[in-house]
Amino acid sequence: MFEVGFSELLLVGIVALLVLGPERLPVAARTLGRGLGQARRAMHALRTQVEREIDMPNLDSAPLQRLEQEIRQGISLNAEPANDAATVALPKENAS
Image: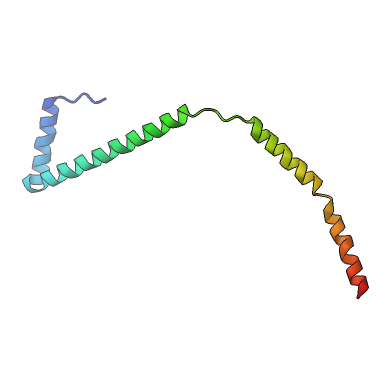
């Protein structure tokens, strides 16, 4: 990805030593190493998840379509009894 040679790394190391100093350079290098490790693990987990999602078999939509038809038929059959509930309530009011 990046073509960094030994001379470029040496230059970056010398600049970091001058900027951070000899006391803070090991701490900064350790922190940078941990961050890079976490980034690599996250990228590996993401790559694994994407590969797993790509390899999943396609779902068969026929059972889902049958279920949708059954639900729609059940809704259309139960739409009419709402009027029956109003007629049942009338005789109770007249009985009082």
